[in-house]
Length: 398
Image (cartoon, rainbow, N blue to C red; front, side):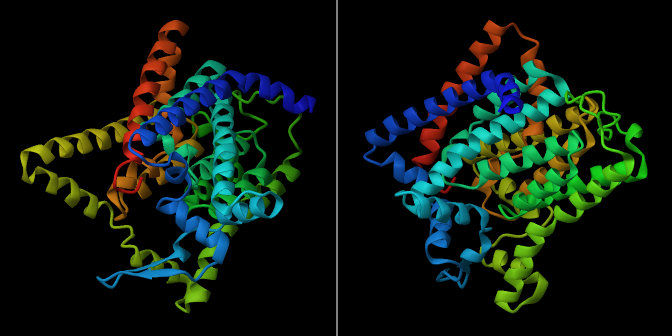
């Protein structure tokens, strides 16, 4: 308990601020939904992906919907960790599967906030860590962090896996990457970060990469406990690298076996949802189509500015010397989000786990006086809460 108390005290400002922002978002959602005659609880627990996860928890895999155009929406597209946790919550409590998912997501969002703080504090210090958590909380699509979706769970596992990488806890990093791979397809990003860091550790190239080195050499690591012997460290690093891809690979191979289509069967399942990786061609056409009329052209300009901002933040992160594992993770998450042919309205939430993109902004916010940064965060939090309520009460899926 003593070992946990000190880190919790350091993270307390970030966690309390995060909880306050999310509480504001939920209150605004409840008021907005009531004014429209809708249930905020239903919007959070029984809409779009949340409903699909609940069906997996309740009925298992095998449920599918055939659309008039021939598309097949199969629940095999949804990775199993969140439904497993929903089923576990239902088994040990009176909660329904949907409410179990909501509780899991709320707890996971706090774990994600703590993990983001731990990563950023490790690299840039406590003040920047608090700012990064608050910026993640006030994202325009931050309401998803409070939904029975898998984004919060995935971000928590990814953040703590990255923290374990940065502090040389290789087995923990691999185990968390395994669980992240059982949560969302983008678990590949966590696996890539673990593998790149492991290869650097094995080859002794750490000193060539700004901001990352094995635990014994990293100057930014707060944990000063003695590093393990080189042989033990190599063994643990290898085990972590072996563990990391097992979750995603295991589920994908299981889907291929179940569908009878071999190792690539999961891609066929995603194709039934019209999801795939096309290098961003479909997204580019979607943006281009916005310029066919004047009102929609404004949305097209907004999309271009948004993508440009994401890419600019990544480039700034590179220039500021973010640790290589963070850059690899963020790069893969961003590439999969922007270059997939999935539903375009969901791209903002698909980018939400890429929290290192916020680090340049967190560094800038941390340089302000506390009173000024509080006004900035507070104002953005109100805007985010209003937008989240408007967005979730809309017709399209978040």
